[in-house]
Length: 164
Image (cartoon, rainbow, N blue to C red; front, top):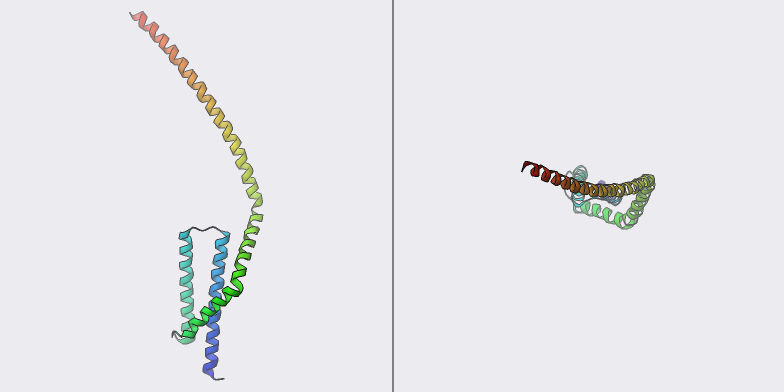
């Protein structure tokens, strides 16, 4: 085999491996999103960083391997690596790994969740008792205010009668 053919095969395999690597990174990102809930803004920011990294990495592979010339088979091999990895590995690995990590985290934080639930139950009971006390105090204060007003009115009448 000539040097040109071996170079092209090696370059093809480098691009293929880079395509697989890009999918592995994206799977890590997908697993991270399964484990920790993300809002749309953070997903967009993560995707931008991911694609910038992939674009720079692919440029470096092309620049080092082919002096920056874009060859159709380099893009095709990276795409082929991505597709094959996605079909053969990613489709099955991401859900299994994501659920596994989620269960492990749930197991680790189970005691903390138990304590938080107990604290919430205690605060609910205390909140009901405080609400009851507030309600009864309010009723008592209303009665007291009415009686004070009545007493004040009587005193005001007596004073006004004396002045007459």
